[in-house]
Length: 114
Length: 114
Image (cartoon, rainbow over all chains, first blue to last red):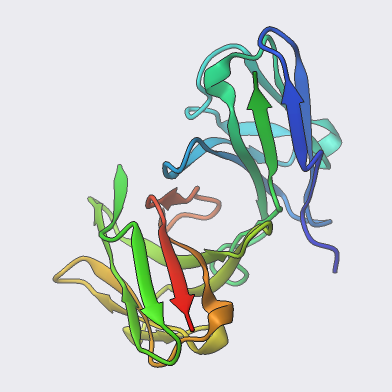
């Protein structure tokens, strides 16, 4: 089966610009998660979708971040306007049953805001 | 809430030596435990997980981990490492609830030298 796909793999934008990250989960996985790792710190949870609904968005840093999951398939994470502290690696993961199969991660998008 | 502490940020070892990467966690509820590995320029890959049962868990690439409930630890071990094991290793926990998110430690960079 195809894995979790994220694009772009890298993005360099200027402060104040807008960037949209995309994640295509494994087909049939209802659960989709976004995580972020900033500058060698721990990987932190951002939000969790179950199908197209936001189950938990407690990790979203502020209202400059907007996540959507169209029709319960792929998801986008938009940062508008980007700030320097938004730089980091954004990971997407999907899961159908974490007990049986665990979580499958994408390769991440490295975002650099200059 | 859960938290994870990886006690060593960097572990340098020589090829064919044994290695232990330490992980302690804190949680007020029962959790599942995971170790993930990130090779350079790749996504996170599941090494092994502890759900229940035997406290010694075997994973891929010759790694194993032991769950110690009294010590709240989940240390990762390999008896003989290879150059190809050079990567960053992440310990993580999730609540025993379907779809629960992962809480990660800060990661341990394992560098295997010839």
